[in-house]
Amino acid sequence: MKYKTEDRPPNVREYQQLRTTTGWDPVTDQAVEQAMRNTEFGVCILHENEIVGTGRIIGDGIYYYIQDVIVMPEFQGQGVGKLIMDELGKWLNERTDTYAFVGLMAAKGTTEFYQGFDFQKRPEEGPGMFKIVNKDGAN
Image 1 (spheres, helix red, strand yellow):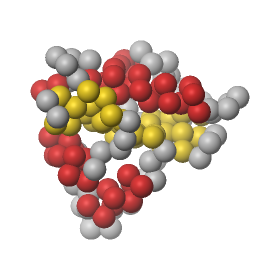
Image 2 (cartoon, rainbow, N blue to C red):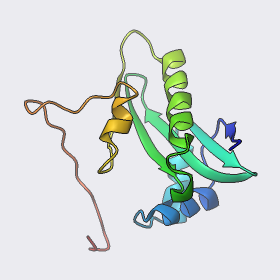
Image 3 (cartoon, rainbow, N blue to C red):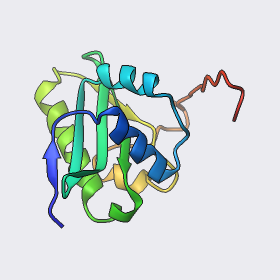
Image 4 (cartoon, rainbow, N blue to C red):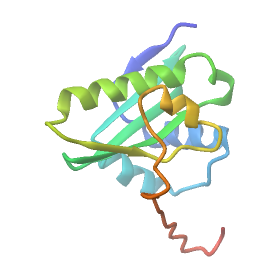
């Protein structure tokens, strides 16, 4: 398949569409707008002028996090995720100084995919942690 790569974060409609197709929890349009404004770098993958995947980087110059690598289910396994990660990696390599920590949270079953881009599991002696703030009380 032929894909077009655009160096930009997705707009609200595109982002919400991708989240819906992959079953991710809903977020408000206002939260999406703010998140996209705070994106250091984003990439969208288009097929026939419709978004089929995205990924973005947030960071502060030393610490970066890869966020929202989302590929529509019908395009998974067709190289879209690789295109996204290649573009994110290229941006990081061009912009980082002598040291940068790049983290990501991998969904179940995707660890091997990210290891292909030199990401490593955290060692047992240095486990990561996270917290979810959910004001509506849903889990």
